[in-house]
Length: 220
Ligand SMILES: [Zn+2]
Ligand SMILES: [Zn+2]
Image (tube, helix red, strand yellow):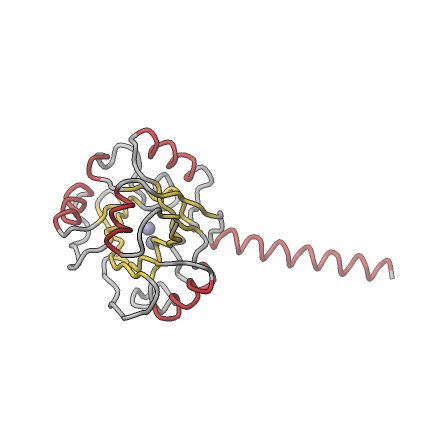
């Protein structure tokens, strides 16, 4: 089994702080075999790395929501329909993944917005998901249509890398991995740790610690 994070943003997109080289080091240290690097409507620059599989693609904005196109060579025009975008990804030999579906707090492609015949896999685990029921709804959707499930961290910062991931039953080559994804030889995993929750958690902990300090002071 290979461990993959299929959704990592990079420095090139101005919303992320991640450098591919450093991300590879971190993911390797966490036991990962590979990752897919994407940016919003841009393909990150390819770099050479050893002993780690790198896939490049982009998270394309379509009229119906975001769509991940992995292993594509040329950037695809944003804001076309999800169906035309998916066809373009397929034409380039890429893999079509629906990221964070049913996340009503984000621009996601949900049920009925894209014909399942144009979808290779559904990202049923996304560590940045803001809508609590999104993962279980995505599971139901994937199972109903017999679509493979993948997980990705959607990391924009180093500490988020690998927070959601995919185990792929495949040989260790990029082509074999992408083929295995299409055939559903995958399992998705992930913890629910969107940045907003981290902030709430951080704030709560601070307040709780303050409360304890006060209390212990009183009790002497
Ligand atoms: Zn997205
Ligand atoms: Zn993303």
